[in-house]
Image (cartoon, rainbow, N blue to C red; front, side, top):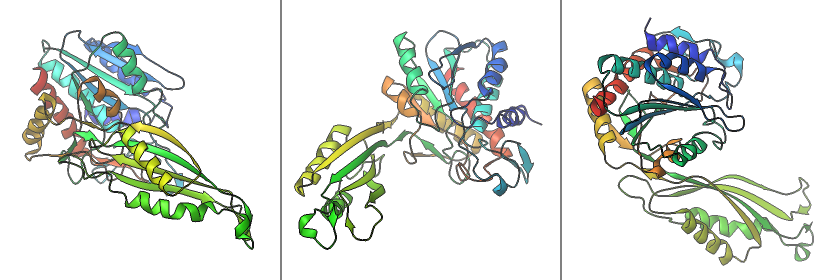
Length: 375
């Protein structure tokens, strides 16, 4: 049994449902301590954050991951217990196997192999782990990056182990992510009896044409790296539940995944202009999940492309799709950020799994990237 598989099994057995770490970070720290990695805990609130660094010189390559996982859901629907790693048909099943404990295990064995071959490598290597990626992401990487910046530690390259691959390992890498802006809109009306609409003001009727305008708005046309910005309504609630009552309020929640063609302030301004056009009385509350980021070029992207072609035998495709990742907190520091990880087809699902052959090749990919950058 391989070292990567053994480590992954040990991590899966720790039921680290967000924001719990369940001892995963202790395993990593103990594993890398003999190689000279300094163990530092940068915990905030209920979130466990681990900063492991070997070396003090630039350039610094950081492997970024999260030890927390999403809840397993109904246990009876799993073919094997979600926190008991199970080998079946050439795959390892268990919650977190693909998102993203498989990548974390591959990080560790890649680093071990690289240092054994290149003990006098240039620069520095670090691992940054959090237990707050699958949750609100308020006390995890965002806080650690602030702390590191506050004492002058600078990341040059950041490799995120998010499951980026689509049909086969390494066929897609993320070179950026769209921004994510959430809104809660409350439209005010006047409650009344449905038989006397002249004495009421129905917020549903008021909002209907504004909703159409919001969803039909062409926010931008995207660019070579990003698709056009989209607005999607996720929740729409109103009414008292009675058939004969005109509601007094309507609440809509919507999200915009936006490209680098737009910024937060512009979206807010244009949204208000649309709502004002229809004479609504409203309150609009915004929450930014993250700005868009892009690593269009640089040594990390080149090293990743070269490693995939060398190990896998084919070229990869640059992409910016998917949701948000913790890379959004690192990119504003000026670091180059790339995401490379397992096939994402089973993540967050019942019977999450990773192919055993992919797990070994993933470790080889990370090791080759280390060679390309630091050997």
